[in-house]
Length: 430
Image (cartoon, rainbow, N blue to C red; front, side):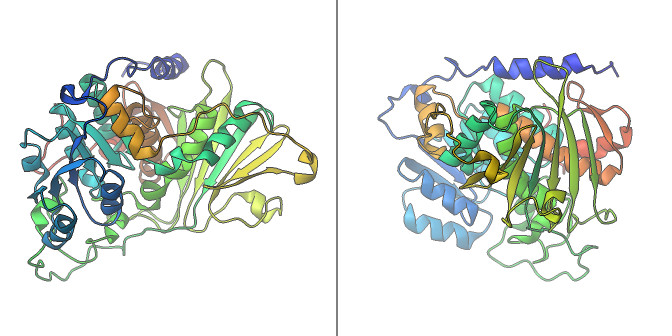
């Protein structure tokens, strides 16, 4: 493998800044911004139902779900939409201009890539993909297609994140050398696969639910929601929540690809995600030789500042540590610490414009060529970093990462977690 240098990291970050979006996205099928976008929705319950509602003012022409009951419920709201169990058949419909993907994580890449390669605009839930390689493939396909994309990190559109980014960028707490991100949630499998093999409910198309995943018998331990705790389908709490929470650090500190990744947690199980995990990343800073450390905690683990009584007892959140103070934030609030040191502090005048709405950004981009804030270039890099935490945990090594080659230079055994094999008929590599 070619030597991966720091220059590779900074060059990659520079390429991201020189975005492909300006002027590349043409009007959707030649329509005017006032015409409704023809959308197909893949996955229509849970998070999928929320996404469906958020794009419902457009023209919902197709609905897809592997659960017939879910499909019938959605069809009551959109009786003119065509119904499908297989997203591949939905994409055969010529009038579908844009696709919303809200499936379990292991189907994100197959559905998104199929839509992108057919020239459709795509909105996909977080994490963008199930593996690191998939995230790169999806980002590259989006660039080639030149269509509107958005990853479903909805909180990115709220004002609080914007104000935090402005404070960090303006130097309110000085030079930030570390950030900590934590959630109390815990998605974990139950150890070994269940041994019982109950019949597949008549409303479930289980083979389509498995999609690219390895063959395994149906079990309610996987459907409808507990799939996140199993490596074949998800990446535990890290996969579920890190794209939401690490997004703030990525945005504020202009992060892209980590230099190193290491993780700790309970003993690794080959089937099940852990009940807790701590991941330590080291990132290069764009344009200079300094680095920044980012640490992720879940399953009840928290940064040491809580035990040291330096922080108020908040729930999930992000802590930025600078040489002039700290900034503690969550989805809807922030505080500068120590509070006594910031008495009378006046934040800078806002300069990051308000979002028109996370879904609306995507719809406008599809119609006008405007830019989305969590497009698949940004969302792909964020997803890569998030999922590398799971790779480091499962490998048990501190990974020396080369983003150009998608390789851990010191751990060839990590390859089987960076990429995966697919069931016959579900292959996605070009």
